[in-house]
Structure formats: C-alpha cells, structure tokens
Amino acid sequence: MKFSASSADLLKKIQIASGAIGTNTVVPILEDFLFQVEGNDLTISATDLETSITTRMEVIAESGGEVAIPGRILVDTLKAMPEQPVTIDVSNDRFAIEITSSHGKYKLSGDNPEDFPTIPAPDEAEKVTVNAPLLQEAISKTVFATSTDELRLAMTGVYVQLDFGKIIFVATDAHKLVRYSFSGLESDLSTSFVLPKKSLTLLKSALPLNGPIDVSFNKSNAFFTFEDHALVCRLIDAQYPNYKAVIPTENPNQMTVVRQDLLQSLKRIAIYANKTTNQVVLNIDEGSLTIEAQDLDFSNEATEQLTCQYVGEPLTIGFNARFLIDMLNVLDTDEIVFHMSTSNKAGIILPTEEPEDEELLMLVMPVMLSR
Image (cartoon, rainbow, N blue to C red; front, side, top):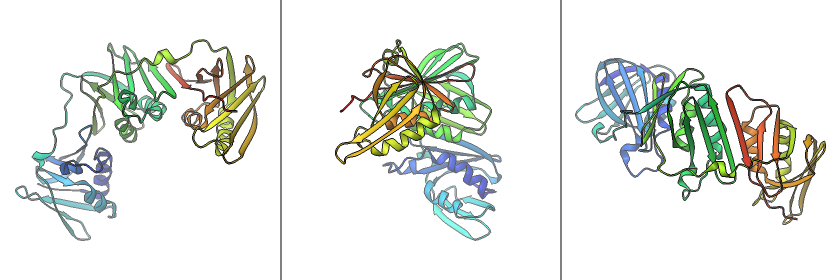
C-alpha cells in the first residue's frame, strides 16, 4: 500500500477519528487507526468498541491495501510538520510503515488490519434526516445534564424519542433535567433509545455548520452519516426513567429576569457559597430578587440584588449555584422565566423567546434551606 496526501488534510481527518480511540485500553489494536486504500480513496477508522468514527479523503495512490497504524505517534508526527505532501508506504507482508516528507523519513511498525474490530454497518436500520444546526443545538443543550453515576446507566446518556415528525432529547442526573425538542421532520417513525454522552460529545465536535445528517438506528447501534464522516455508537441498554413524572405542572410563581445579569451575579455569589452544597438562596418579591450565599465554616457571606418581574407570593428558595450557571450558560435568550411553586419543589426555567417548532425546558431541584 502506498499513497500521497497533504499532511494538513490528513491530520484534520485523523484528528476527527482520534476521538474514538480509547485511553488506557487493554487491547493494543484499539490504539490504532485502520487505514484502507481503494482506488484513490483513503478510509480512516478508529474505535473503542463503544464508539466508532470513519472518515474518508481523496489521495494519490500507487497501490491499495490496508494497515493498522499506531494513533499517537502518527498524530504527533503530523502535528509537528508544516503543511506539505507526505507519502505513506506500507509493506503489505510485514506492515512496516515508512512516512516520507520533504524533511526526511520516519519509520514505525504497523499492526495486522485483520485484528482491527469490525465496525457495525447500518443494515436493516430505520432512518431519519436532521439538519446539522438542530442536532448541534440538541446536543449542546442536553449533554451537560447527563449523570456520571454508572449505577444509573440510562441517565449517563441522552434519551432520544422520535415521535413521527418530532424529536425529543432529554438528559437528567436527578438534580437537573433538560428537555429539548424540535419538529418538522419528514418521518413516520415512533421509537426511543439512549445515546452515550461520549458519542454525542464527539459527534458535536465533528458536525458541519450546515447540511443534512442521516441518523439511522437499530436495536444495538445508532449511525450518524454526514459529508465524508460516519459515527457509530452502541446504544445504552437500559430503561430510561419516567422523566415526565418529576416536571411540576402547577407553578403559580413566575419570575422574569435578564439572563446575563443573573448569570454574572451567580458566578460572583457562588464564590462565597459552601463548597459542598454550592447553595445560593433566592429571595423573590415583586420587582426584586436578592441572591445570598454563605459558608459558615469560613465565615464567608455575600449578597446581591437584581431587578426582576415577578408574579406570585413572596418566595425564598435555595438552588445549587453550579447547576444554575450550567443551565444559564447554554441558554441564549436575553431574558428567562422561572416557574416555581414552593421552596421544596423543582423550579422550571424557560426562555422568553424560542424559534418556531423548537421547545426547551430546564428543571432544577431545590437545595434544602440551611439557616
């Protein structure tokens, strides 16, 4: 196998695929890229057995073939090069690799491509097409709310529900919950599955700014295909909890506040909060929001006051400042609305404006007031 390509173009492709290479893997072949040349097409694959990424590029090939190339040394070599043509020559019998550039030659040992795991193909899979910006938005607004508790396996991923022309994304860690949906799909499918956080994070970084994304899925895997790339991830095989049960429906108290003002205030006040609970206390009355935090162990205390629009009875409620900051960071409207009932029930955060056919709901559980 022998081919030539731009070092910069090759680096860009392998950096996309490298996200699927596992760290500290006990199977050495999983630290490799699989290179396959057929005609003038180079296919680069990487996998950690849970997530697989395949990308393609055009090269100038003298002969075809395939080889597994150690990932770290290849990435580091190309990163250290200025943009220039490089030639990769592989001995098909011993898998010895020689990289030639204008600066010199670099030799390394490859591995047998037959040892590389087979990447699942979307045979007999259902399919729906989603616009890249909407998928990017769905991942950005939900993936941060997933759990890290492996005992609650389903909650470590994002729940996706296809409801004919509508798709719903839900993430929760039992302390906060985000539900984002959009409609307008050309689909007659009605199903649901749970996608792993790592796969969605990799997908988010690889997605183009615009264009269609083909999403296919079967009982075991989900497949995302766009431009020259394909990402395959194994679905989380666990029952997602009934998230609808925790969303309160009666919320007579409503506070509208400027998002950036609240976000910056919370960042300052959180410095003085207890580092275990991150508790901030919101005292809300007509036209006024007072935010307080204290850490009795170190005699730290802070108070700020903001203006707001408020409809309801005076209310004092505590929240984890870190959760509120995470939520406000992914919102992009000038103002947000808090819907609340009592100090021991969840608060709901909604944007004051959102695009047609899109809906976003964020829920945050209160922290018991400690005075």
